[in-house]
Structures are given as C-alpha cells and as structure tokens.
Image (cartoon, rainbow, N blue to C red; front, top):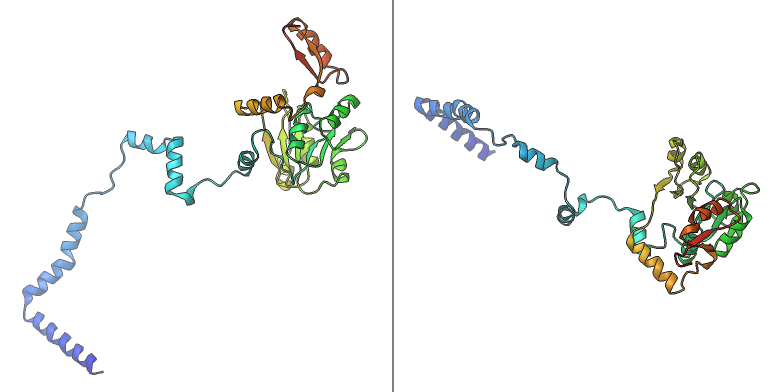
Length: 280
C-alpha cells in the first residue's frame, strides 16, 4: 500500500514538471505521432518483386541432387515412402511385388500368359499361387512351373480356388491377358486391399468402374518390360540352374520359321514358348 502511494506521488510530480515545461510536451507528442508516421511511410519496400529469371528459377523442378540435399536438410518434408518400391529394393529385382505373406492369383479373368513368373513367385516363398486357364495343356505347365492350384475358370473362379487353398487377406492379382473387360472383372472379383498388376496389353479402349476400386482401396499398377538389372539377374538364375525354364520351351525354329511360329502359338495347346535359333 505504501509503495502504491509513493508511485502515485512520483507520477503527480512528473506531470506537474511537464506542465511547467511546454517544450517537453511538444517533443513527446511529436515523437509518438508525427515522427512514427513519417518514418513508416518513408520506408522503402523491403521485398521487391522477383525478376523474370528468378520467377522461372522458383518454378523449376528440383534436380535429383537438389532433392537429395533437401531431403538431408529437411527430413520431415520428404515424400512419404513408397511401400512397393521399398519391398522391391528389399527382396531384389526378380522376386516381384508379392511377398511370402501374400498370395498370387492368375485368375480366370487374368489367365497368365507367361508361366515364368510362377518360378519367381515360388522362389520368393509366395503361397498359395493360383492359376486359371482355359487350356488344359497350359494348366499342366502352370503346375510344372510352381502353381499350387490350377483351375478351369469355366468350372471354378480363381478367387474361390484361392480361398479353398487357404488364401486370406489381400492377394496380388495378375491381369496378363489384355482383353477388354478383363481389368474391370479383376477389380470386381478382387478382395479389399488387393494389388492388381496389369501385365496384359489391351490394344483397345477399355472401361473400368473406379468407384468399385475406390470402395475396396485397391492398388492398380501397370507394368511393361524389364530393366537391364532384371535381365542380368534372370540370366544368372538360368545359367546357374536356380530356375529351370526348359519346360517353357516347347519348340525351336530358325529365322525363316518365325512367321510359322507365330501361327503355331495361336493354338494354346500346341506351344508355350518357341525358341528362335538362327543356326538351326
């Protein structure tokens, strides 16, 4: 209480001193009004507009080196990890996207055209591997190459065979035919959370229903060809006998016999792969 009285007395004393000194009042008023306004309005803009070349530089995408540097400097601003890319890096180039805790299906809507991938899936420990094909010869070849279940889609849908073989969760489905309507059929048949790999090349306009895929939260991935590292790994596996591709080669021709080979391959029960040997 005593300190408050002292402060009050000192304040009154200072006010009386200002009243007796008009020049001090003028200086205080000037400092807190006119001087502040003049300084604020006279200050130049500290953020000039960028030049045209600077604007273009700001819109330029980052180079790979700049992206790596930004990732090191700002680790929290990096892109979210890609689980498919991480899995491919972990398992190697030849084993594909399916992991041992997943199943792989080549369904009646995706009758697999290249049985070599069965060998790769088997080597990766994927189970069960289910294949469906209209051709009994190719179904037998699928079994030889490592499929655990083979079905005629006219008798049993591959999804049913997958469940019968103990499949659960979210399988990887290969659409390897490429006929119109098959991709939409694969989306319709796929369990929720499945991954659909589109290997077959459809040469016509096709229609899918995105709402079905969205409701099931499916992963849809289109693939084409292989990189040099995958070719090198495949050749090594074949050369060292880790993968036996002999059952796939059902005939050989020389260069002159290539046109006839294409005609023969039109019959699914006649051949699987025809090897071109120029010296034959």
